[in-house]
Amino acid sequence: MLEGDQLRILNTSCANALGFAPEINLNDGTAKTVDWCQAHADATEYHYNVFTGAIENPTA
Image 1 (cartoon, one colour):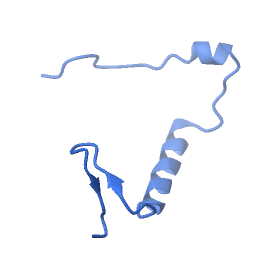
Image 2 (tube, rainbow, N blue to C red; image 1 turned 30 degrees about the vertical axis):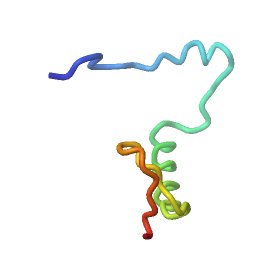
Image 3 (cartoon, rainbow, N blue to C red; image 1 turned 45 degrees about the vertical axis):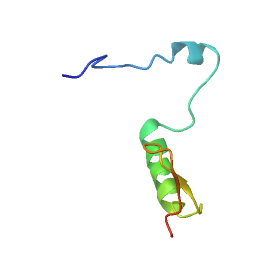
């Protein structure tokens, strides 16, 4: 069984009160982030594996 909150809702009222306003909506921002990651997947020689802590060379 899952533990913790079943639903979390972001409250941006404090940020809005300070004058923050997003320049891009969440769906567009997520899509742009995925596109960038896919376009730059091989831009680095080594990748850090968060699960094992190993630094790997994917081309080796």
